[in-house]
Length: 162
Image (cartoon, rainbow, N blue to C red; front, side, top):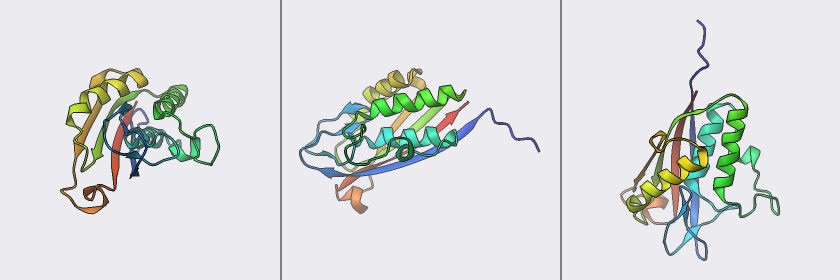
């Protein structure tokens, strides 16, 4: 049986804990909240999960491989939109284009529904795709686990590349 390489799917996951004195970046936008997420970069879990899904679909390893979190490197404190832009460049250099992506952000707080449209528009612009190629959803964990205790946020993403 011959395998059709024209469509490929990838999956990504990321999690970061909350930390004081940091801005909360999700889906490329700043979300008003009393804490941000702790990480080497801006800790945007949605973009990190998306980058892993895109890279995984192309069998190009993961975000940590391409943008390591070693202390004092060029990626320390970096805006994750820059990483996403570079991942899209890598995919296009390899002959791929985004079909669509779907991201689920798991957060007990803050309430994210007012920011979903802005996240979708931001990510579409960064990737140079139509907004309807980017789906973003938010959910809680019904007060269960570290997310339910408001200790952090997780995100899942799938991406189809063609």
